[in-house]
Image (cartoon, rainbow, N blue to C red; front, side):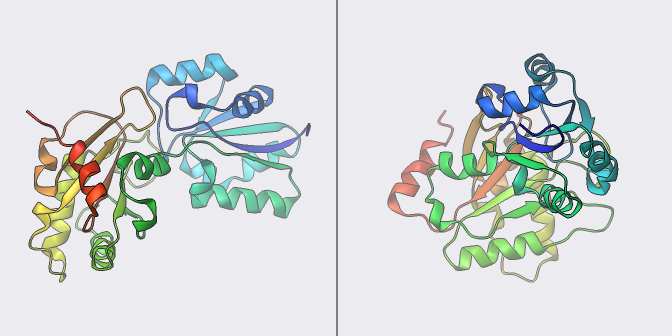
Length: 263
């Protein structure tokens, strides 16, 4: 086993029972442990449980992660573990860390974890091969509201492809504070604001079908089938993603309707 270096460790979507044995063992064996805290977040009770499982750790936010010089310097002489919720290599920042380790001759180790992205697609019941380009719905910063996510959704729909939308986690956009995940209600409002600014033909956006996927891979997991116009009625949960189906096949329709709330 390497005596120094950096390990990027996927700890799964939030239920720590889903951490692999390898993820636990490598985290325990590290000299210094960090939990990356700006691309997602663990509930407070899970944070304490993680400490009991692997040992003490420090929170790692965006500025230190993106500059990374301090971390890489430590990894030249010690074993450093950066634990990441979900799967580490999905984020561009984490890919950059690997490349910088290779450039500096630092031992690098990657341990995959279950990602909420793959869980959303597989659990939804929609066919995985029918998903188009993924988008992120971001908070509005002052007057700035990009409409490119909506344009991509329209492009996917025109090609008969579903869209997976991740929701922004930090209303400051800086990645310094502990994330404040966007709610489905906020996402619905922002989508309607995008529609007002867009030249796309999206007058019917409130009637678009959507699956709300909340806290996937945790004991609080919940999926609800609704419409964009009804997102304002979806409450509760911590971390959310949305799936916007295009025209659905028969089995996909059955799967979608199975997630509807029946009174």
